[in-house]
Image (cartoon, rainbow, N blue to C red; front, side):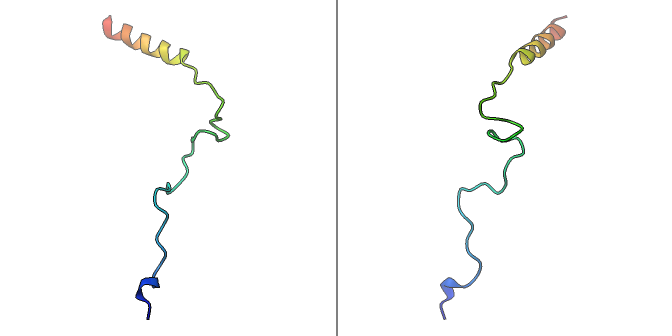
Length: 53
């Protein structure tokens, strides 16, 4: 009997177990979309002012 060949096959190494729901290149997050940093900068400046005052 060939004991080496018995059992379930080993999973592929280095492959992710699942796909992320917001991965780049999907419908929700296209590859050519530019991230808008103006809103982020506004929030950061407002937080800095709140900490100062």
